[in-house]
Length: 259
Length: 259
Ligand SMILES: Nc1ncnc2c1ncn2[C@@H]1O[C@H](COP(=O)(O)OP(=O)(O)O)[C@@H](O)[C@H]1O
Ligand SMILES: [Mg+2]
Image 1 (spheres, each protein chain N blue to C red):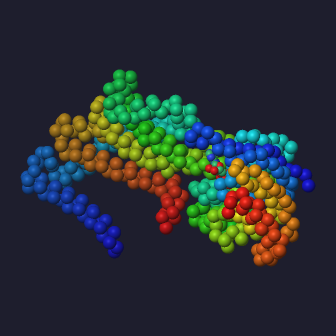
Image 2: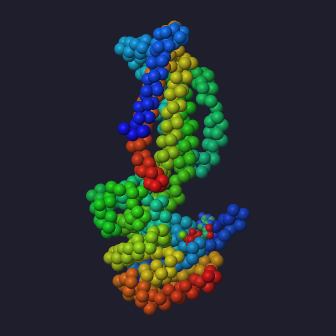
Image 3: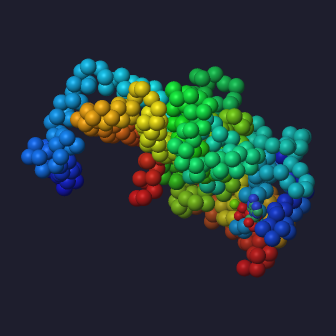
């Protein structure tokens, strides 16, 4: 077994040990058992919520918001990023607006969003999309700025139209940056999903955590938090797979360049 | 021999950072007959790339014009294709070898089978059969440039414009590519305009030589290269006429650059 594998297993051991310590400390009443219930109890509650469908209901509600908000941000962010990155006029016209909106911490727009969109899904989807939009736009612009002159000239000597140049040269060439922006946005989408559900909701995983805390059902609250951790972890893993599929050429090239 | 491509009084000035303008090319005129292999020779930085891009319709001239088949061009022409100096940047890194050749055919009115056919036969022509599924980064420099040549050939252009295509490969590979190109030229009867700073390369390849010198560059001389085809890396380079041409070009260009 290689050193890396041993250390990696060690990493899981550290995690396991911590959970065991938690369990022991809680059971031995070294910490307040009410605030820090034993892991086994949290696990039990998690299992119960899983079986009775409550967790699925909340997760489903969150997933819809997350998916629509993130999807909207990718579509609009890519479109605007393309207009700003490829067309000089587009950049000059939109840059001041984008640069002014970008520093705004996204939760700050929630009150306005509530004013115009209410407290249901449209508001939440908008807030998620708003927050995810910026990293995607900025990275798309940056990726397009990096498209090599020679590649564009190659397309021109073959007589490609602007539309063809965008689809066949500009977007693939900028894809490493675009995907990097999408990865940043993924984490942001999760954050804003939870925040929007904490502010105003009657379902969703963020709501569930808050609701359980208010009802003083502390183990269930932890169960919600554990669920979020696992969901975040899985989303990231899924994205890594997506990334290595779409950018195989890019990683291959980078590896070769380092040799 | 009828003139297929006519460069008429072409000049080019670029704006400089200090607001004035830098004149790179001045009143360059020469004609290229159908089936000729014209080498344009000049020292580095004399404006060869600029000239080739103007001929290829990728860059508008400041004055003069380029006439192809009797008409002044205003942009890239269907019957011409440019092969760039930086082959590493001119290939689409996210496409395979065959994908790169296919790229050049996608906007031509061909059916799918014909495209596949052309990809296969042109890769065969440049000796890359068996590498269809490789990505550019998995190939040597010489092989990458052969992909670029196959891609240009696949469009079946009348005129190939080549910008120092072999300048960044090692000497042995370069000789192989030179002979490959000569073979293609003789087999397919293309018209080639090939710019290079390498005097021996120009004498070895060309049927006719145009010399650029001065600041701004102008065409000082044009002469037919009487060396017989087929050429041979050893015999041709030892031919007294080869040495005479080489000296002649050296002297003319050397006086202008002061070295
Ligand atoms: N787009 C440009 N803007 C300003 N100057 C340029 C541009 N392209 C080329 N030049 C200048 O024109 C001169 C000739 O360049 P180039 O055509 O690349 O020469 P060569 O290919 O013979 O080495 C150089 O001095 C270069 O700095
Ligand atoms: Mg050059």
